[in-house]
Amino acid sequence: MTKDSKPLTGIRVLDIACFIAAPHAATIMGEFGADVIKVEHPNGGDPWRRYGTRTDLADQSLAWLNEARNKRSITLDLSKKKGAELLKKLVKTADVVCENFRPGTLEKWGLGWETLKKINPGLILLRVSGYGQTGPYKDRPGFARIAHAFGGLTYLSGIPGEIPVTPGSTSLGDYMTGMNGCIGIMMALRHREATGEGQVVDCALFESVFRALDEIAPRYATDGFVRQPEGTGTLNACPHGHFPSGDGKFLAIACTTDKMFERLTIAMERKDLLEKFGEQATRLKNRVEVLAEVEKWTRSLPRETLIDVCNNNGVPAGSINSIADIFEDEHFKARETIKHVSVPGVGNVAVPNVFPTLSETPGTINNLGPGLGDHNEDLYREELGLSDSELSTLKESGVI
Image (cartoon, rainbow, N blue to C red; front, side):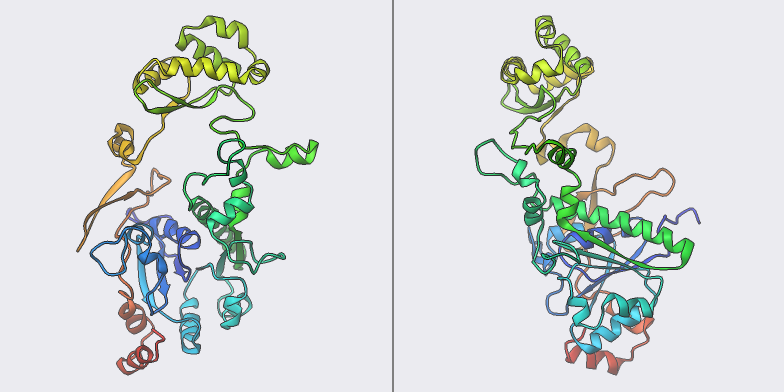
């Protein structure tokens, strides 16, 4: 491995998916050196191109520029016979294919797993869908919002007795599944190193959500307990939630143990609270009173003062940041968590930087989302060796 190479240098990924989850898995791989080829429908490409805030570039929204980073774009209609044939040629030299069509769609086009693995026995196929490739719901359409609801997260979100709210971002389940899909691909590649065999990585959006719900499943199976929405608090610890500050802002405080609560009482200069509520079980039984005492304190001071006092006493606390707060925060700046990239025709675009950070082979952002079909010439003419007349025919027939 050379000085400038990355962990996935030499790996080729065909991203034939759209929107977020499966493409995000490919994006992560591209940040760490994989050659990611975005395969898009010739008529408009990935709908994500037009999602969110538009720019002066045709079909290249800010959302697209961010999420399609480090990818090359080619156009190809997989539903057409000629299109499927061209994809099969590309599969021969690919290591990974990422897709998120409704289960059975690739099979309908003659591009199912059994076909692809005959072409390339070492291929890894990531298949992302709302409900997975099996089960009675597999044919249902799915998006992250539905996965949040079906997987149990939405039920827990919001104020008790009120309509459940969106748990943070409507795309949270997509990004979680994309990361889990990337982990699955990495394990499959490791298996291939040992055996030469490829395999399918099946990722359902709802399962990424469900897996992140700590003890909710074993608790229900043990005693039938159904966890309810908890507002700004949490079931098993107190005080552990969100509080208003004296300057009209908000902060989070998390006391998960008796020791942390002791530190909080020292920060509050309230030894009497430690004597009265020193044990977690006692605090949970008297949750309303404990939270009221903490809120009375937080309302008496500015947010930054509260955070400083908490941190100086070893109490986990942090500001509840808006995006404006994030852009001004010195820690975000010090870790270069936000990357500024110059895009011709748009200007400076700020995007989340590569994560995680590797000490010896860090990932990079080489470019943001490409124009539709920007790399047709590279792939079709130079790599597959198609002639001018062949390319012209394919364009006229809507294949590319």
